[in-house]
Amino acid sequence: MSTARIFRVAIDGPAASGKSTTAKLLAEKLSFGYIDSGAMYRAITLKCLRLGISPSDSSKATEIGKIAQATTITFPNMSSVVVDKTEDVSSEIRSSTITSNIGGVASNKSVREALAEMQRALARGDYPETFEGREGINHNGKQVKGMVMDGRDIGTVILPDAELKVFLIADAQVRAQRRYDEMVQRNKLEEGETVDKIKKELEQRDHEDTTRAVSPLKKADDAVELDTSNLTIPQQVEAIEELIRNRMDKFQ
Ligand SMILES: Nc1ncnc2c1ncn2[C@@H]1O[C@H](COP(=O)(O)OP(=O)(O)O)[C@@H](O)[C@H]1O
Ligand SMILES: Nc1ccn([C@@H]2O[C@H](COP(=O)(O)OP(=O)(O)O)[C@@H](O)[C@H]2O)c(=O)n1
Image (cartoon, rainbow, N blue to C red; front, side, top):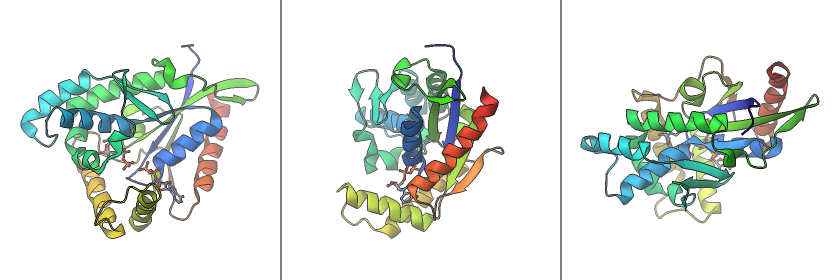
């Protein structure tokens, strides 16, 4: 990996506020790397469940921490999440079983420490596959490489000195409706699923994420807040692209 600095964009916010959609489109548009930190918590949850360990079992906290320390998670392209350099878990980690079991993993201090180390290494370019073919953009005659990482604690804990921090929010009813529409579109709507039920689940997860002791979801003081409730996807991508381009002048 070259020693060229990487322009780092941190996108945080509650569930279904549009983080990953926006981050992926931005990364595609600007030829930046993309790192989905939530996928890493999902991958550890999957590993635990496969080993028959319940993430909410507090007597297993040390064991779960060790699992995270022994795991490598990489992103060879925009939509793939690979565990231990061999298995592509991209699809499996999106199940509702993973989502409903993730709290015990996300609130585990040693899991967070292990993943924080990996996330910072990914953002530095220590895993070159993340940046393969991601040449960045030409800004004022200079080629600038970049990466977008989304999650809950990226701007506050993982990359507190990120070049740009964005905090995405949207009305809970709007978020629930979008998730519902997405499930219908993907043919993933489970029996008994309603917009109301999804809304309650999102709010419950947001509550857990904002109130946990370690790295709670919180807007960084210097993050730009963007409410996507009344925006189209291209509008939110353009708004952040403009912020990135403005800050690139100072970055060089
Ligand atoms: N501005 C928008 N208008 C309509 N749908 C949106 C908008 N932003 C995101 N979505 C949709 O909302 C759903 C949740 O977005 P997603 O990016 O998965 O959120 P997050 O990563 O924050 O959980 C997805 O189906 C996405 O396509
Ligand atoms: N940086 C991060 C990213 C995700 N997470 C946890 O992982 C869960 C799933 O994150 P996600 O981004 O895949 O979920 P969605 O917002 O897409 O529903 C969150 O609800 C958090 O509990 C976290 O604690 N820290």
